[in-house]
Amino acid sequence: MTTSFYSSCFGLVFAALTLLSTSATGNDHVALRGDFQNARIQFTKAKAGTVAFIGGSITEMDGYRPMVCDILKERFPETEFNFIDAGIASTCSTTGAFRLDTDVLQRGDVDLLFIEFAVNDDQDAHHSAADCIRGMEGIVRHARTHNPNIDIVITFFVNESMLETLQQGKTPLTIQSHTKVAEHYKIPTIGLANEVADRITASELTWQRYGGVHPAPFGNAIAASMIDELMSQAWASPLASDAAIRPHTIPAMPLDPHSYAGGRFIDPATAKVKQGWTLAVPDWASLPGSKRERFSNLPMLSADQPGDTVSLNFEGTAVGAYVVAGPDAGIIEAQVDGETWQTIDLYHQYSKGLHYPRTVMFAADLEPGKHTVTLRISGDTHSLGHAARIIQFVAN
Image (cartoon, rainbow, N blue to C red; front, side, top):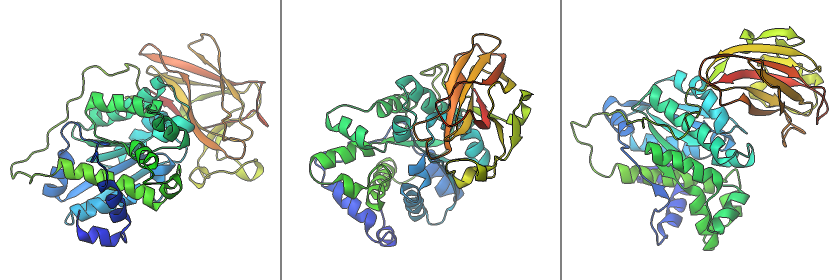
């Protein structure tokens, strides 16, 4: 990396690089897989490129993302970049798979995609291994199907419980599952979580200096430095004058045939109200709990009385809803194609004081084809009320 980059970051990334350079194992936690040249060729020859970041609050915050943007601008000073910030706090890879098209793919021809969901799949969604794979594979396979030339990097951040697991010599479930996807699709990964765990165990770093779940600038600089190291490894040789962009090979068989590779939003305005539901911006001033600004002016399909019923026609193998669930979040009863009713509790562990964004699935293993889902507000609740507020329906 250039001296000017060190200067522009006031030595922060340089300090992180100095820490990393003391490792006896070098860069074991930077895994270069497959052909990682397309973005480089695009940035160098076209002198233009689009780089997107999708993830939770770690991506949304002023952290590793803008640092990586600076690294790319330093590496390619003549290139005009379009940077897409698709980080949304609290969201997991399931939500990421369903919002990928709207939040990333529809915003330009993306050349390089950074993905970060290991922490939120762990502490927010409490995903099973199967859920982790369905979400992450959905993002990767959808992105590569949409644009076979896209280069992708997955970064594993860390929380306290994941750190403890790593220090016990084990691999956290989310990292293990996301790595399976990366290996299947030959995607480079940044093992920041492993790097931090090793450094703390060796008394070369503290959790406090790293900064916690939402890393401090120094912690984010470690992540950015590891991504820079990936680029240095992949792009060490001079670019050949006849270098050409080549499509990545997409495995014929997915890891999970029901992964959310066709994930998409469905406008709630297309639903058929049978009783009680309305599509409007919620009257937030009258509701208990805080909300995030990004949701404050969005119309939502809402109901709060037991028995309120709505149905949606859709095509695919899975259906659910992207919702905000606050202190009054209720229980939804869902029925697909007239079969058995299922109950889905919208209330989340973080709903007590916040209208919390999350994706809930009503069915995820349907036969391909046209279906109808019917939703009904239950008379039971574990909260202050019975409310359901749907931002978008989701389908695969």
